[in-house]
Length: 447
Image (cartoon, rainbow, N blue to C red; front, top):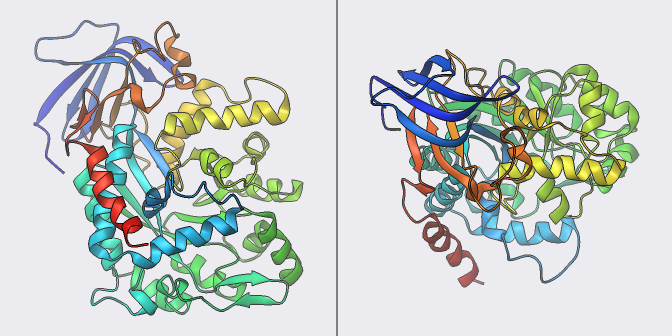
């Protein structure tokens, strides 16, 4: 990433400090960090003015970058999650490091336009066709890291353990032809490969268990042990079929199985958590496990609506993600969490705007291992997102309620570590739509 000037300052019409917006705020930045925050002040000479409401940078806590190639390509056959997965596997089979880099770079740039300053990439496409490792066994992961750097987005690479083809009442099934690209054979070999990756100032190496379908219970303790000190994510109870198979074979729910093997806890994030029992909710909340809601994906795949208010009440922090990139709009994802709660509960205000901002920012960053980001406060990384208050969507809205009406189209400026990545709604890479078109069309022209 480009290094910012030694010292600079940004004057905000409104800035989100703590639990709400404050007018006339000056944010001083030095060495990529917020050095000082002054309130109730006029801009000083040389200050850069940021319009509208300035929020901390957004954390996309759950992304599969290559799924972006599926947007607008899977609605002609109906079906379920499982039939959608066939299309997804067809794209996965065609990816190589170069096409992965191009697609991910464009996908991350689109996220940046929407205010994302850090992405949690749930990465399981590790090897070449047939499962043969590349000369560098982390070549596909390094393509993602390079893509994020090019797009100006920090990353937590959630390197994913994936060992089995699925789970039925009779047990785990073998990997299919495409899934062999995902697997390292066992948890020990997976951990050895991940150990070759290193953190940097813009990269955190995290880990993931794909699901209880893809990682047999006997392997879970080794994954949990190998990830000590790292953030750990896992798909949990995304589909009723997953729950039914787990209960039939293991005699317990996925959440209970993970708890039994030491997977749950404050460093763990349960993604989706859609089909939970009341004891599951208590297990996740009582362990302090974060949950990641991806409501646009959960709706697109007809997965269902997760009990996110009940999980929060039980003790689980909330984060949000774009998952398969039905849309790259974290503001809309946060709004859908509240909308779905209203539809299922018959009540409004299940999540306050402040709670949704926390999920977008501080809690999302924490679950990705960036405790030094997600707040506009001294010592925090200088990630600032300016949302216009004069667009057709936001004009007339109270600043404290903008998260419930704004969209990605209202993002004017995005700073990452004090460096401008988006200005006037334009990304530094130029025409992101053209980048996406060029990266995606080859996958479908090969059909």
